[in-house]
Amino acid sequence: MKEALDEIKTAENKTVAILEEAKQESKALILRANQQVEKMIQDAKKRGDEKGKNIIEKAKSEAKKEAEVLSAEYEQKIEQLKQKAAKKLSAAEKLLMERIVKAHGNC
Image (cartoon, rainbow, N blue to C red; front, side):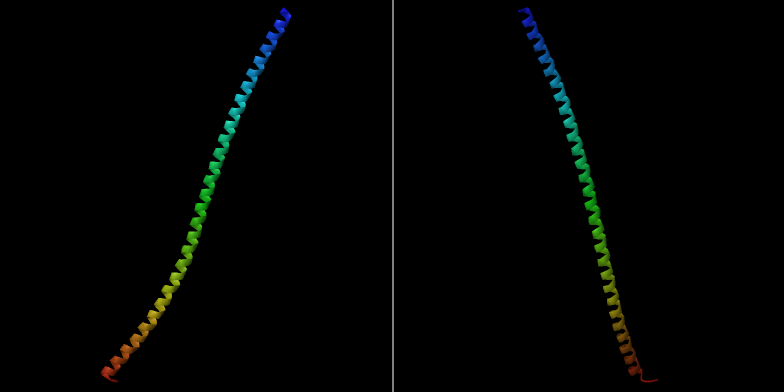
């Protein structure tokens, strides 16, 4: 009978040891899982930051290109207006010269 009790006690001790070991392993697994999750979160944030920077850089580049196109268009319009103004000035100068000549006669 004593042997049976000793065997039961030994089995109980083994069970307690196995449970304790399982508990420690589960804690270690949970810790590793938490660390992996934290790393995944950090990686995702980093990728998000990089994507955000890329989006901003792309937007800046597109805005710069558009500004250059608009600038070229406006420079062309300005040049056209200058040419029109020069033609009108030339016509006005001719008209003024004709009036001066007519007013003073052909000297």
